[in-house]
Length: 203
Figure 1 (spheres, rainbow, N blue to C red):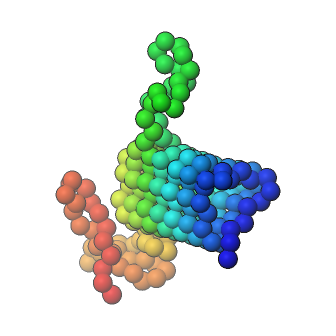
Figure 2 (tube, one colour):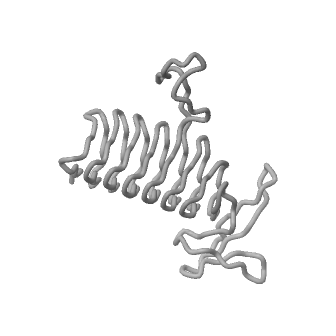
Figure 3 (cartoon, rainbow, N blue to C red):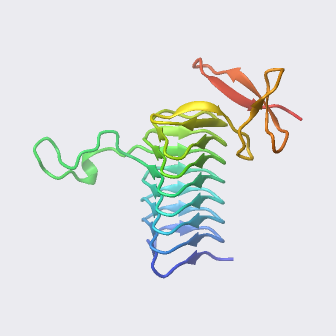
């Protein structure tokens, strides 16, 4: 099996594409980017230099993934999502000279396994989106999202939990959380930093 690149797409010769990956019209994949197997890169999407993308990742139309982002296996990036890479963006320096790549340090967004980023959401680097987390459409993420966290708003705040199927979890009478689709159960536990995290319970 090989990859598929539409004629109007631009893929740098140094980029690596896994088996079964498809790059649609007008998408651009820059030098040294690495995409795993079974990925879909939608129309007009952009993948920056050296970006690392795992297997079975979907980048929907016009998604912008700037370096040095890392997307693990099974990540979903909705239409027009932006993953930034500059904490102090300026076109020029204090002297009015155009800034070059060497004049600033790129910082990345890390999206962990199975996480989903809703349409037109923005992740302001540096942030980590946890495993199987879900970012609502239009949200602006400015701080890390926990595993299974459901976040929404500007700036994004956690409003609930989601399971691996993507459905919002329901709280049971014993304080555990259950997926209405799969029946998988989860439990809240405190993290070392004082926040709350969700862990899967054994069947």
